[in-house]
Image (cartoon, rainbow, N blue to C red):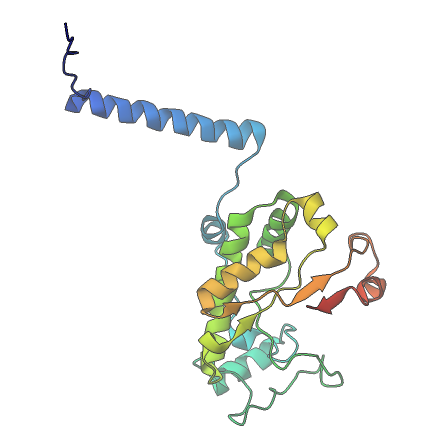
Length: 231
């Protein structure tokens, strides 16, 4: 005798039951978030929320020297904005490096143009620390995207195609990545490449050196001398 099991139908919820179910799920998620944030301290606001709460904005091109990235005096910033109200770079159309400021006129930086988000302080400093020491990858990508937007505008203003640019981060050493659980420079670079349209390439390797934390500023360059090599 062949036994045929009764047909089954999928369980459905009435509209009122479905709404109640959604409220229970939402309440559970809210409870977990509160537990993580207030008790365990596992969650932090995303970059956009942090920046909005702090009324933070990336530095305009005229706020800093395009050669070395140092903050300009107010009078210099006003003059730069008057000369380039649209945020165009200071370098001439010939492609020569832009003129430096008093802080770098006697120096020869290894780069021809600097693009920055802001001064390494306050909100930006806290975000970098969260990326480095809590392995907050999403925050790294978000900060990188903000920098990538500024980079894209600078490239276009200088007459360069962002798609032909290359982003090459200086990575952490293997042991530093193992210790921290993240290569923060690479995570930020991924966001930069995504927002700017540039290509991300791994062109450098880093030998392990003692952490820069706690080393006097005058000795930090010596600490990393010879640490990087091109692959």
